[in-house]
Length: 173
Image (cartoon, rainbow, N blue to C red):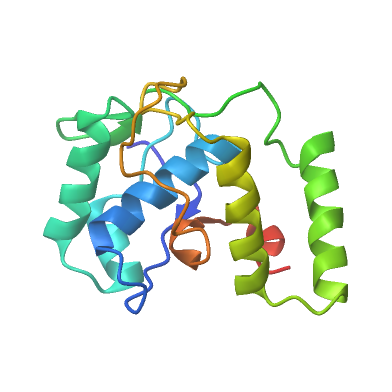
């Protein structure tokens, strides 16, 4: 049996975001950051239930949504596997990319200036929305100009941040 990808879902019950949507968002985030790649197997519903204490039907609902969007595929008796990745410029989200390094430096400066995490999230979301006004990344990975509900307005919550056993240290900084 294939080993599950090194992604762990974090469920924030106080976020106001439906649990299955948190899993969908975190999976998409992992796809954008390269934590998950085509061919990787998502954790089984049982593994997610054991780690998060949520209903297995919630996990299955999230996986069905990801499958409907063409991001994963269920293979009978084997699990759910990533079909394609998300993300714009190749390597832009890699841990050592110049953009990520600049953003990390900016975040450290913001923290040094006394901004709280939610302040930074609100500022980042405002700048992001004004920069990309009228452009929205659809589920197909390209600009489509429509609203699909994968908005950035939830950026101030941790519900969109997956963890990875290989990137755990990066998430805690």
